[in-house]
Amino acid sequence: MARRLYELVGEDPARRFSPFCWRSRMALAHKGLEAECVPWRFTEAAALAFSGQDKVPVLVDGDRVVSDSWAIAAYLEAAYPERPALFAGRDPAAARLSAAWADAALLPLLGRLIISDILPWLGEGQRDYFRASREARFGMTLEQITADREERVGAFRAALAPMRLVLKGQPFLGGAAPDYADYAVFGNFQWARCVSAFPLLEAEDIVAAWRERMLDLFGGLARDVPHCG
Amino acid sequence: MARRLYELVGEDPARRFSPFCWRSRMALAHKGLEAECVPWRFTEAAALAFSGQDKVPVLVDGDRVVSDSWAIAAYLEAAYPERPALFAGRDPAAARLSAAWADAALLPLLGRLIISDILPWLGEGQRDYFRASREARFGMTLEQITADREERVGAFRAALAPMRLVLKGQPFLGGAAPDYADYAVFGNFQWARCVSAFPLLEAEDIVAAWRERMLDLFGGLARDVPHCG
Image (cartoon, rainbow over all chains, first blue to last red; front, side, top):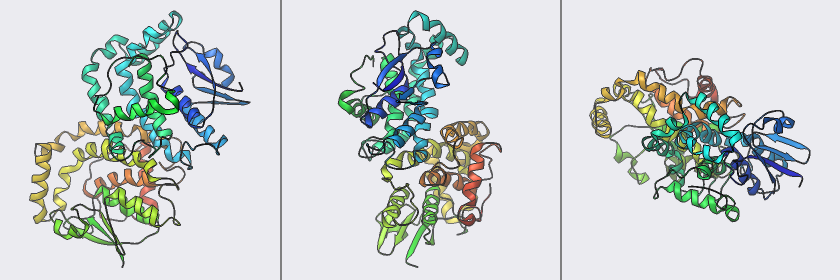
């Protein structure tokens, strides 16, 4: 197949758990585009050298190579304008804040709740890298980072307040149908779901109902994968 | 004039300081529409009875009456489609998250930094109402709410992280030009600027440069008003 998406996986290549790769996978599905999954693991930087950088997702579409989930979304919108719009026909720049909110307001809080749950899904070769790099970043052990997550989950739930305000009036962040804002936020939840059973949301949370709707999209694309949560 | 916007003012009717009224005022300017300002003060609920509710902004446009800043923006977009787009030609629902972020993630943090500075701008008749209603909401005196603002301002600045991520790549949240996302967030800053001299941003913050650009819009519409900050 001419179209390939390099996606982060654990030891089991079916265990895909990067929030950013999930954004791209959902964006491809939104456009009705297939893309072969190329499993990629931490420490395999050399395998991405062709892209000029060392992070996934990387999309290879014929002779085009695009890295960075935001750039991939903008590329898909520009390259496939006749397919369903990821940004409702407008300049992706005008939708940037939604993805930035997922990145800067949610992801750091979420990471502190689930990061230690990632370790068991990695192969031997990745565990040392993962532990050392993350423990250096946080200045404590993986286990210490998540030790107080029962107390910290409240801050994560509180940070979702803007989303609840939107979902009170419409089923998706995009309106009546999902758009890239939904995929950006959903990627975070799917990251967690694929590696961690820690309950992020209360059952009656309007965000939990939205997450179920997201899992139903595209014939259960995101639901029917190895997961924990 | 057939078009009127009811806006919250202090004792001086030129001191306009509602974040939501500023959103509507900027949205009108974006559309190139004039609207007479009808000064409205806390406790004057009766003057809004015609709108079926008791909060500003209320827009009266000929025989149309629209309350709620979000509804006003959506109305303006639908009623004046030939004028510059507030939502870049797409369904306003898809842009709802940006305004919701301004509401739910920024406004509560900002309010705790400046709320005691509002009091001096109110007339005798509004001060008791304002103090009693806000102190009941927070469970402490106005002065207590802002007493630790030097410590709290860091949390407000941190909450702006998603915006910085966007502004690293483009001058406005809307992209190359401002759209309603900019006005929604700017309304919050303008609220503060009109009543408080408390420094919200560090001078070198990319958000401060954006705020200056917003103050320049429409011939200095928001800059050239009575203000403190």
